[in-house]
Length: 213
Image (cartoon, rainbow, N blue to C red):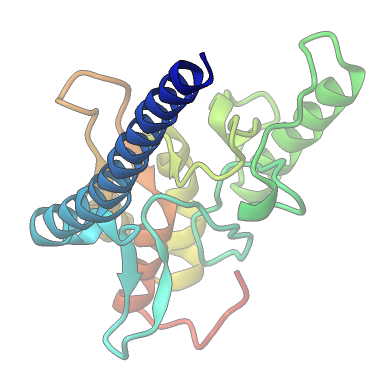
């Protein structure tokens, strides 16, 4: 009897150890493939075929200094620059606090903020007090980091920038066209003017001597 029980126990232990060994081997194999080989393959493909995008679409000047990313907006408020849309991310365009204001359509705070933004936008760009204002000029994006403004928004800022920089409006419109991203696949979304690349292009045409943004 005891011999039979001992034999059964031995068989069970042998089966258990075999299953544990198999589980450990499978875990190690998956760890090597999923945590080692797969990331390396994806990284290699990204670097070889999509180097710019895989590294954050960074904008680097001739001195090797990173100016920013094409994917992340920055706050510009100086007269000589195209102004970004409002941002509720931290103090504005804070990538560590990405998000919207979370204010609803019935919020009085949101209403007052937009009203003030409309008045400021018209004043800054020399518009009539009843001139239409693009929605993106006075409202924040959901992320607070949107790098684009609408072509209509950019067009309304042309006069101010041309006057301050001493450039012709056509020169500035040419830069706008050069820095306008088409809809994805040609039909998904709307065209968007990348504010950072546009302002950097403006500085290359006429350096501003480090004017405040």
